[in-house]
Image (tube, rainbow over all chains, first blue to last red; front, side, top):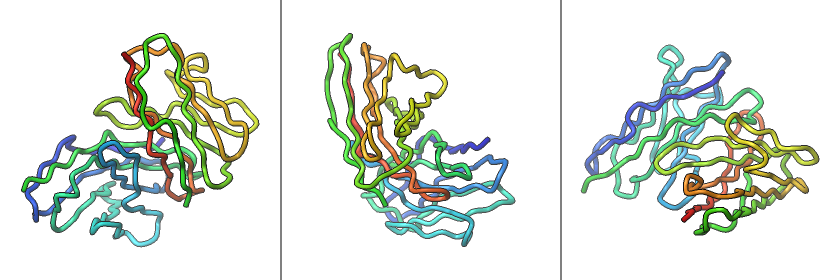
Length: 113
Length: 114
């Protein structure tokens, strides 16, 4: 079975500061991991994905994540937060067939001017 | 990639009534998924809709409450029946891009039941 755990339901950072959103996964098979962002009143948009290629994955809007098998983690980072990054972020894992996604509980990011 | 159009984008409904949400995809897909996102919470899978067969419902969701249609490979509907305030949520349609690829989402339907 697959699952993801997001530590910290709310994260606040100052504008220009490092963003770190944590995600740990549990999977009995090699996982495929994703980060999605949800802006207010919108659907989910893919930020980046890990699909067993490079362990350091770069996504849109300056975000990146590193897959660490030894730590079963896939934390999302951005060197410098921007006001427009304020949103809800979801980590997700999928099965081998890619048919069902399991989402974490989400992390709400607030950026303080 | 897939572009998903979902409507209505939002609605306010009276308790006891039903609302049908439509989901249109710009390409043919085998499976479509319906999620519920309750206020301040994550996504919960309601059911998987396959064309030509009955939808498969997750634990806690039943067909009488959330009937789903899948008449062809590009379209699906989800009905929320006999609504109560507890059904107030965002309902999201999704398709999988294929094995090991991302899921694509509609913009969601924000439902408020009064």
